[in-house]
Amino acid sequence: MLRISEPGIGEEFRPPAPRPQDRRLGLLSLLATLRRNPLECWSAEYFREPIARVRLPFTTAHLVHDPAAIRHVLVDNAGNYRKDPIQRRILATGLGDGLLSVEGERWDVQRRTLAPLFARRTVASFTASMLAAADRLAERWRTLGAESTVDMVAEMTLITLNVLALTIFSDGIARDYDEFRTAMNGYFAVIGRIGALDLLGVPPSVPRPGQGRLRRTMAYFEGIIEEIIEARRTRLASQPSGDGPSDLLTLLLRALDPSTGRAMSFAEVRSNILTFLSAGHETTANTLAWSIFLLSQSADWRARVREEAERELDGPVEGLADRLAVTRAVVEETLRLYPPIAALSRMAERADTLGDVEVKARSLIVIAPYVLHRHRALWERPDVFDPSRFLPEARGAIPRYTYLPFGTGPRTCIGAAFALQEATIVLAVLTRRFDIALLPDVKVWPLQRITLRPSDGLPMRVTSRGRGR
Ligand code: HEM
Image 1 (cartoon, rainbow, N blue to C red):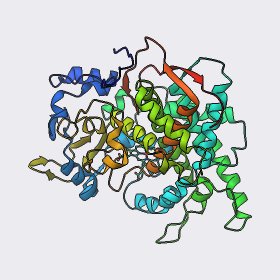
Image 2 (cartoon, rainbow, N blue to C red):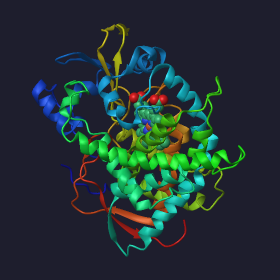
Image 3 (tube, rainbow, N blue to C red):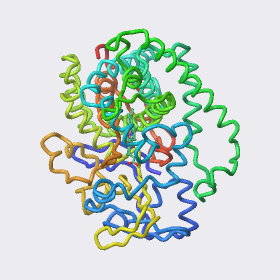
Image 4 (cartoon, rainbow, N blue to C red):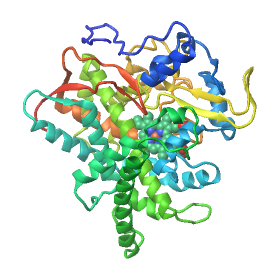
């Protein structure tokens, strides 16, 4: 494992990442490495080749990192490439009726209905809530005492949950917040657990160990969410249509399919609330934690973010995220180096061709943003931290389909603008108000679980730089 020390002026910083395997792994070591850390499975060949084929016991996988082929799979012929059964099984728990999991006509209707909730203007209207959550965290850190140590991953998980709670349920959750958070943490700790039985394709009807406890944990949190929705629904029913708290829950309960005028069912509203909480918290939390770590290793970019934050944060709330161009470039470079969703997978429904590669029906397609973003043929100095790639004057030169932290095509992340805005604002506020340093001799290593996160958290020392946002 790498021990970090800050690079000197002019030195290039290569953030910690596994060295690609010299050769492809054999089946047994592939399985063992997948279990330990899937990020360590990739061999050097995949970072050079546009498309590589891997034979697995029951299927063939195509690892696709060629921009034209990616466009074919995720955009032009997306109808032929569905989310694969393993992904669906992970998602089916609890989130089954939500946008992330539904397919076909149901997905079409939901995506149309939900689009306005994440439109640019709606997301911009959440700026004040995002600032409020960042300020609240900063206040807590300020009272911790000089040179306190925090686990940055846990802190960022907390703030992203707070931002979601404020933007989904702006008027509160009608019960003790700590109880809500504990129930929510329990829920997310169990829903994504994927066992060996799933990887081997054992049908869902076969009982899994610990399933009873898992179901109870889920049912408890789902019950809380149902209570909150029911209370809001009753309240909105008694108010004229323009009234009511302006948050995602009101928007969701009032959302209508533009083609049919139909509202969502109770189960769909519930599943989508759970989906937003689930898809939106760990992804954004890890983006923020990695950004803070990367800035802690680069005095130059830290100074640039701080200078921008000092200039812009006291200005008008309107358009704030757009004015934080340097901070946003740091966030985007973080998403390049450590994409929270490190790999996407699809299954071909019918046979197809990708360039001159034949794809059989039912074969697996893997598009790994982690590999794509460090591909030798697509990026210069791919392993070097250099946010200037994403500054406004340079960003337009990045070819399409080479940078996909949010996926692309019809199933692209609906929350991308929300997440980018949140991460940019929170990073600016915290960098302005605190000196944040990694503890000496800490091991930092990326681990791929459901998202890509630091393997042992990020113990960091925070020191207040005085008052003000
Ligand atoms: C940095 C933060 C985030 C990252 C990196 C991220 C990444 C992604 C990716 C890669 C996908 C596409 C998966 C695929 O094609 O298989 C996706 C889908 C999705 N994301 Fe995000 N996401 C983030 C934040 C959010 C937030 C904040 C929300 C909502 C509040 C959200 C809601 C969703 C939903 C609902 C989908 C499914 C869209 C569909 O299938 O139509 N995400 N996300």
